[in-house]
Picture 1 (cartoon, rainbow, N blue to C red):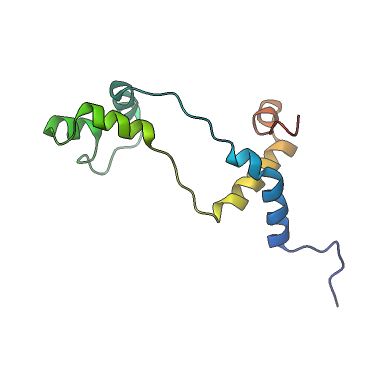
Picture 2: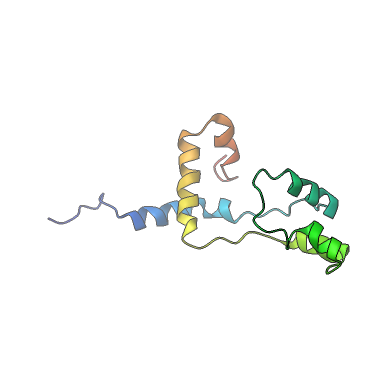
Length: 115
């Protein structure tokens, strides 16, 4: 029994979702610059205990291994990396939110081409 044209594989569906939603995923805005004090305060409020403290900003400053200006520059130049296999998952998530999300979610997960 052969597959009729309407029968699609998950890979084909994922490719279509990526083609539709990748422009939104690729939109990058520069986050606001934060000071070292601001990021250390946010770090203290993090609800999960850190497994090691040797790489925390306050530890690096206390030891004198890094200068405050260097750490602040590094904090403000950090960005997340994702594996290529995560892109279809993100596209499916955005597609689902656009279709079934709350009004606020539908607006925040739509690109300028959808409006």
